[in-house]
Length: 167
Image 1 (cartoon, helix red, strand yellow):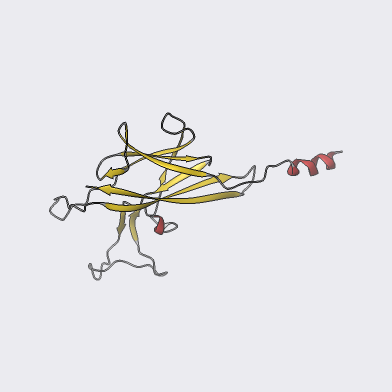
Image 2 (cartoon, rainbow, N blue to C red):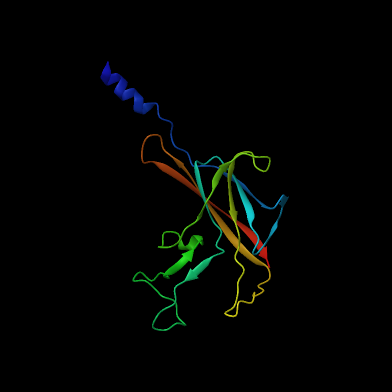
């Protein structure tokens, strides 16, 4: 009898499916915006049935300069840039690269999903004056994961959205 129960319990587990990722919405204050503003905090919302989600906006990527020649970037033994910090998805897996952790939310802005606040940085020169860059289109990546039942299994969905940010 005990052997029959031990065999049936693993068979009752649900098969893990990939998380579904829907639309992205961006709010500046109370207003939904299609074009962001550099230097102002924006709320990003992502519709998803995932359990965890991270956003990689790509607005803040700083590469360490070489100490031998300050005009060149530092490169590690694998040929990758050495980062001071980065939230750019192309740096995923490198030391000092980190996405923005999103919080589970349900509100009038989104029925089921995640939210995170993010500010695209204002670029300044050595004197501290703001450098106007105009409109820049960023590719924002979202990594949504769903984790297995009582085990190490997990599935991931990666989806990107293009988003324009002005000065």
